[in-house]
Figure 1 (cartoon, rainbow, N blue to C red):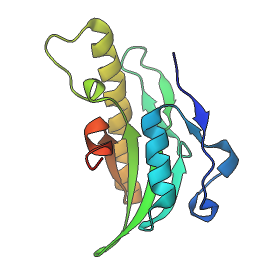
Figure 2: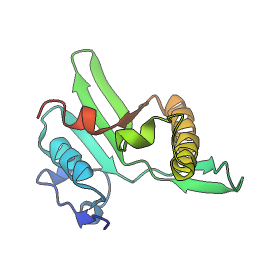
Figure 3: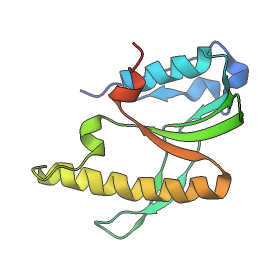
Figure 4: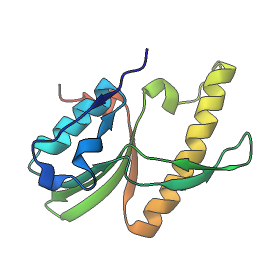
Length: 139
């Protein structure tokens, strides 16, 4: 069963885009939205507001990738921007004994992520894939 809810930020001025159209497709994404909304070091953030073209390796056609988040935050060295994808760890690592379906999912994700890395180079962002390990590292 798919999980899908809307998120309404408390700090609407930090959100870039339509605050009434933030969709969380997992509890993990919802946790990240809440963190971005409430963290004072987060200057701006957006959810699925960026579109990146990529070529699907199976049909060789152009598709559109909507990364989960764009976030700008302050650090002691200055402001940084990350383009973030949220994925279960099992979809990030390809194992030798992976099923055919897992291999297909990984290949498509990999094509999206390579396109995202190119996009980030052009816009001075960093691309990050966050798994449950990073999302819940500090409780």
